[in-house]
Image (cartoon, rainbow, N blue to C red; front, side, top):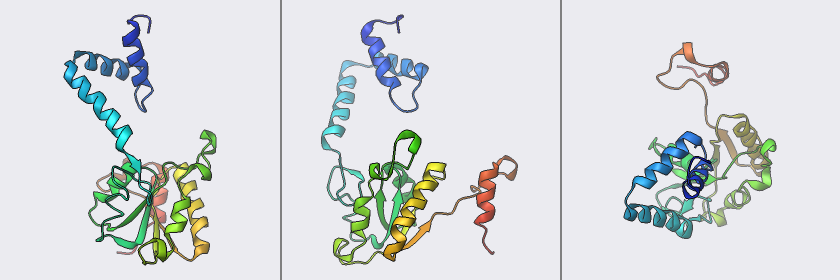
Length: 204
């Protein structure tokens, strides 16, 4: 960053640390910020600070929230007998968009990845076990845990681990179906997706 003054170079370096942001994107973001009025920058900084100060983990499901328990866990209309396990808070949003799932959630904040040094102890799984007891779930027994981790090698390993952890406890453990996305063309589907689609076929 010798071409830029030190404050600009430092800002670009900070943006580069964000996931999915390379050198070019970091430069564009830095110069965009430089062009904004001072009051907009103040609002941006205040928003970042507010997120860090007010957002906490839900004590029940580990969702990011500004109230504890979160809006999903405290909603009396949710079906407390079903828990959907997802990797990240934004995965919860994807499930909610279907408008068909009315159960609860459990966010584990990651997936098993030995190469990145992420083992079972790094995932937020301990409070999932305690939630299965009716006395910790407003008197409702959990009948099913849906594992909705991503269809990646790490996601599959995580799903297998959670299944082995929960099945001895007598709870039904299911995995979301994977295969052909709606609206896609067979010509462009990779072999792993096609294999999953064939394995998850059903009678019509």
